[in-house]
Length: 306
Ligand SMILES: [Zn+2]
Image (cartoon, rainbow, N blue to C red; front, side, top):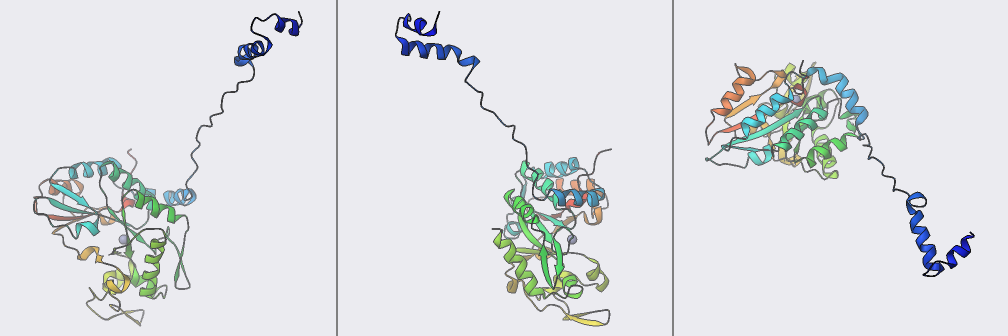
């Protein structure tokens, strides 16, 4: 039977008949399922740097992330108020233990991202101090920082997780080894973070080789804390204490805000005779009115459990 005669015999006229046949054929012919691409996660712009940093620095870790979670869990007790340093320094409350959570990023900004993720799960925020003389930051060329552009994503990611970003001050090294002007260099750092939408309020002195050799802290580069007016290195005299925090637009130095107890994992060892457990015990026995600064360096954390 020809199609045309078949259509003619259809009781509702040929137009409706065509529609009927078309619908009947739908599942077998013309309907294509929309193609749903499984979202493939693009590697972050810093993937290559992260790989390199992990190859070079992951071995440093001495504490596990489980231990960091244990520390965070202790701080969930309702007697604690955990804050980034810029907020901690302005918060005085005798009904709680005020804790300033600080991280100096000496080697490993990608462990810092992991650390900030854990803190976020606990609704804690902390201050991460970024070190311009670190390998991850870039290089110092012609007395100025030549920054790794991919690190901007790391700073923005940290900031978006709720972190405060600060400057990990290594001005003695910058002045003596790289011949940088301390004020120009610091202002340039702050304006770089400002260009990323990140405000900077504070600085924390880094303990690098030059200050160690000189027995002078990097914070003495600021007139606010200088106990001398110069240092001599390899027979050459360099001025210190010539700029103030205010000159740089900074509001605080981490060692000089108000706290009564200081727990630090510097060198991968907690500054308590009983180590990490000792710090946890001290925190558990702290009393409202106490003010505590905790410094944890990201590179010491994330040891693989064996
Ligand atoms: Zn440091």
